[in-house]
Image (tube, rainbow, N blue to C red):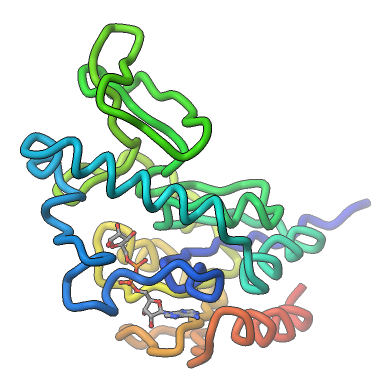
Amino acid sequence: MQERKKKIVVLSGAGISAESGIPTFRDSNGLWEGYDVMEVATPQGWAKNPALVLDFYNQRRKKALEVTPNRGHEILAELEKDFDVTIVTQNVDNLHERAGSSHVIHLHGSLFESRSCQDETLVYPIKGWELKLGDLCEKGSQLCPNIVWFGEMVPLMDVAAQYASKADIFIVVGTSMVVYPAAGLINYVSLDAWKYVVDPNLPDMKPMPLLKMFAEKASTGMEKVREELKNIR
Ligand code: APR
């Protein structure tokens, strides 16, 4: 008889993609690659200047296509050999998938999808790097990037919380844990679950049982977590 694989749930943030060459958000004084976040990542910003918003995400998409997954992404993908792994990422790049992770929940949307301005259930893949003014949905409305902007609901939060509540092991990697509701995911995790945090600048975390923190980059920190997991497989 086969034993059930233990469930790992990972909450990842911008830091896991840093070693691939994608800058994190909060390292630059509220500016995001030189842009004011409120201008490019809010419904108000979109209403005010859609061309600017499209250009901003086009540049992010182009960059994401140029870079490759790093060791941190790869180790998470390799854990699928021994564990049932769900990645909940705040990142809009696709580096987890490209590293081989098969179950990735994009809490904040995806750079590689567009959605209709008129009907947000109409979602389409974006081929290539560019989404333009005049690219329309089947109902004739402008398409915008399928990103969950500041001030919007996070539609996949409930699903993510369900996974977190069933995790045997919860790994937080490369996130400052300041953006909610994503940062609140840890509150759904069982007291009996092992919890690991990997980040060179460890986020503030309330004390909890079975918590281990590694003040390291994703690549080296995830290697250490993997060693730890050998004992609790
Ligand atoms: N490896 C791991 N972590 C790293 C690395 C690295 N090589 N380099 C930096 N970090 C850490 C930083 O120390 C920081 O704690 O990554 C974290 C990045 O934090 P943020 O820039 O705040 O990114 P994130 O937590 O993903 O932001 C959450 O906020 O801007 C919005 O919607 C956007 O999804 C994003 C959300």
